[in-house]
Length: 263
Figure (cartoon, rainbow, N blue to C red):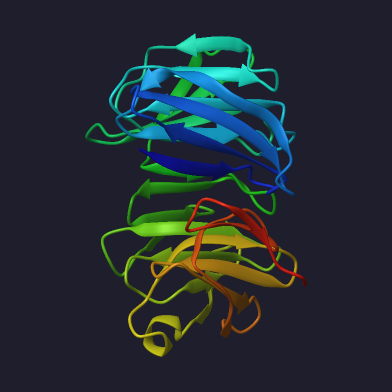
């Protein structure tokens, strides 16, 4: 039926959620080099929009589905730690940068992001926000609406109806609006640069972003990975036929096969 992928914020681990004809999701856990740590653990949730997240230490992962109430938190052995059935219409999951919370955002109007405690699965609070992106280089980034990023209380509006992804570096924060150019801000919301990516690449645009100390890596709608200069916003092609970026050297190709490049 299909495979979805989710990487930890530090890109050291990732999970796959494979949906099959029996109607369930099967979760596997891998390290950054594609080594299998856990294979085909059956999810509690039927297909209907699988969602997932993995912690930065690779010891915990969470799964859910849009069509069902509830979230599973499991350890590296696949053992269920807790199940929370309080939240419905789940759109996404992410472990907070301090690993104290699981951020959960849903499809209600207005959209909310819930802070679920890792320790016991209790919802500690919720905020009106479309999603929250954990960051290792700044405070975790709040998207008040799908088209509005908040950086140190400053609201930054997308030129289109939503942002697709964001990555934080030591220099600042890069965001990708739908069908528009990549934009880089410093950590206080000041514009650093706007790329010519869409103009130079025949209306292709970036749907996934990650970064290291020197570059931003962007996966485009056309399954091409670009390496983008953090300082200038210029880009170059480094790999084709890619479905998901794990880190700066490892990818999942369009045939759902782990692949790597020599740096």
